[in-house]
Image (cartoon, rainbow, N blue to C red; front, top):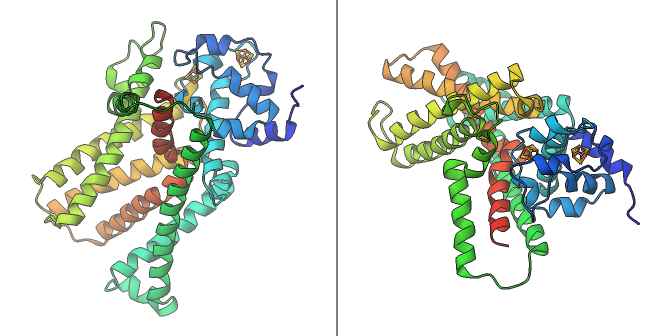
Length: 369
Ligand code: SF4
Ligand code: SF4
């Protein structure tokens, strides 16, 4: 007989699940979900796993990542057990479970701690930034009290720590998914089929669109660019584009005022996408426009806010450079922009952001099995 694990059920509530223990296993949620398939029976099955405390099975699940949190199942649940919110909480649990340091657990479970960690990180990154501009007056003042070498080394340690945590998390997930993957030998065709499914999803959100384009969807009558999949797409490609643009800019040392260079053009287009996507996502959450946008956490909201600030300050600096405005205000905006951008990269391993890595991995395994 299966044994109920109330401790684990309570833990999942700390990750944002609502009253999922009210579930009486009717199966409406699974029937209603457009993304569930015969070999990916969710969300009902995950509620059972949670109630039984089957932690390993949750971490070994690729199906968990097939849900896009559209909220249809929650709207139709006769027991108000909020299965959509429950799936999102499970993904937070999985992100925290793959990440080795325990930092993600703290960020997801405690709002005050997530604020303290974010502020501390911003302070350290601010100091680290000054080690790259030691000629600045503020930097000289700081170095009187805190040696340059200590701050610089700390910054490098924090960056390495994040990179290692992310790599560890990815390997942990792959290891767990491989453990339960069917043993028969995979063909090259299934490998490329799985890879093309991941690429199609990233390029055009093929699966996510299914949620927004069904007959009775609230979004069906809205313009394409307002739909959640398009907002998600804009944020994702905006961020990726900015990362590539910044790397190209850094590698080729493009002159700051040359706007027609590919890295600059890419940065501008990516910046527009990012600001658009982040603004829409923030507005939808504030208005709680659909069930999806009611199920947000402070950590998720902070992430969106950081993305928005990074985009807006980036444009501010572009204009400042263009009109050659070397003012104190623009220096402050530069410091904010750089700290937030570095913070975003660092939080990648320890926030909802990590789903950008875990979802494609899960999708690959799902299509390759
Ligand atoms: S979560 Fe709700 S809809 Fe899904 S099985 Fe439980 S009671 Fe039924
Ligand atoms: S939130 Fe949407 S995609 Fe996720 S399980 Fe519910 S209906 Fe399916």
